[in-house]
Length: 95
Image 1 (cartoon, one colour):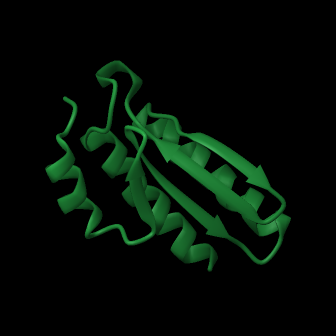
Image 2: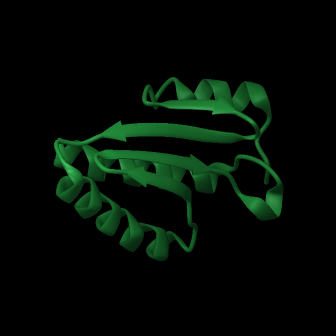
């Protein structure tokens, strides 16, 4: 179920790396080098499969940009925040 803007903004208080715009939550992570970035992406991919929920993402050398929304709901849902939480745990380990 799609979350309303107020609920999303409240949930984002626990996700300082993430912003809400264009009907999705977005984050950008910078790593030491391409290898570390790609390693995190590989670990995130396994989480995505486990959650059966997949981000839109862009990688440029050591930068990873991630966009999460639930296409079926046409907006942000709890699925997005659960995956964002898993992504945060992976990125923290990499840093």
